Length: 198
Image (cartoon, rainbow, N blue to C red; front, side):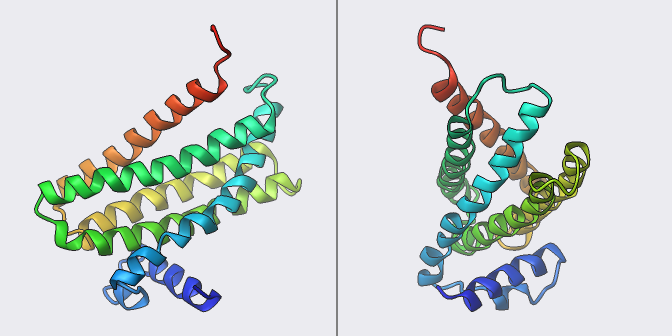
C-alpha cells in the first residue's frame, strides 16, 4: 500500500461523507482491497497515540484522571480503539448475514476502515493544536464535536449507501456501534486500571 493508494481511499471516504454517488470509484472493492483496508488500523494507531497524549494532558489539567500515568492511559485508549474496531466488524458480519446484506459486507468493511482513518486524522487537528499549546483545552474539545458528528454521519451513510440498510436499520447499526464501543472502553478501563482487590 503506497501513499497514493492511501490518499485515494481517504479521498473516497471524504466523498462518501459528501454523499457523492461516484465515491465508490476511489475504493479498491476487491478481495485484496478488503484485506488491505485493515492497513488503515495500523495507520490510525499513531494518530490515536498522539490524541491520547492530548486527552491525558487535558485530564491532568482538570484533575480528572488522578495520578494515572500516560502509558496506562494510552494503553486503554489505543487498545480500546483496536478492540472496538475488530469486535464491531465481527458483530457486523453476523448482523449483515441476519439482515440478508452479506453481499455488501466486504464493501462496507472497506469503506468503514478508511472512514475511521479519515476521522482519526481530522480529530487529531484540534487535539494536536492543544498539545503544542496553540489553543486551550475548552476550544480543542469544542472543535472535536464536529468531527464526532462527521463520524456518526459517515457511519450512517455507509450503512445506508454501501451496506444497503434502511434508514431505521442504519440508525440501529449506528447505535450498536457507539454502545459497543462504550461498553468495551468501560470494560478495558476496569480491567487495566482498577487496582487489584479494589
